[in-house]
Image (cartoon, rainbow, N blue to C red; front, side):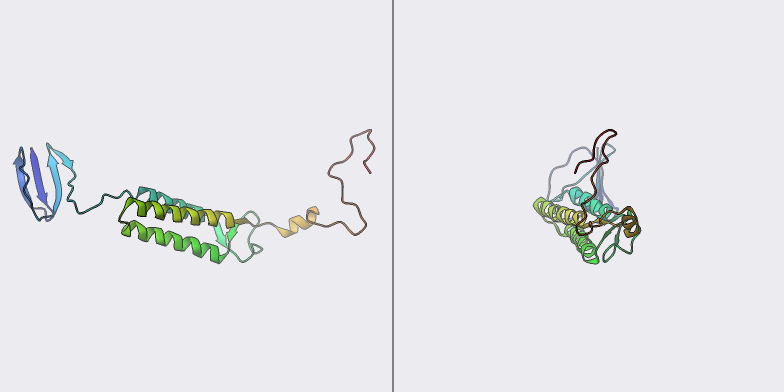
Length: 167
């Protein structure tokens, strides 16, 4: 049994067991075959799968989470990941372009190219992320200090008991 419903909700055919194809210039909102909804191929849509692009957009948004904008990271608490405003703006623009491509893509190749472009932007963003460090902790630990002129750098390890220090 076949039921055809027009886009305006009007039932065109309610109890038909077979259909002879005839060209119609109408929009169909749904077809039910034996109580099960079926899709209609009107020939007007390409049937693009934009799922990979939607997934890439979600991954790009997730990459931004936890990253803050800073000029040099010195104004951030230690352990915070930061990027410059330019880097953040570039990723935001790439996400906006991907959103637009989702609507304007005409072929599956268009979708694939949009995914590739967005993934490249996310990679650039992730490469630019830096972790803020606490300058005071570095100074207290002595890391990053250069030896005084004429002074030998400290050895990496202490000699074992009973051994003479290396010279």
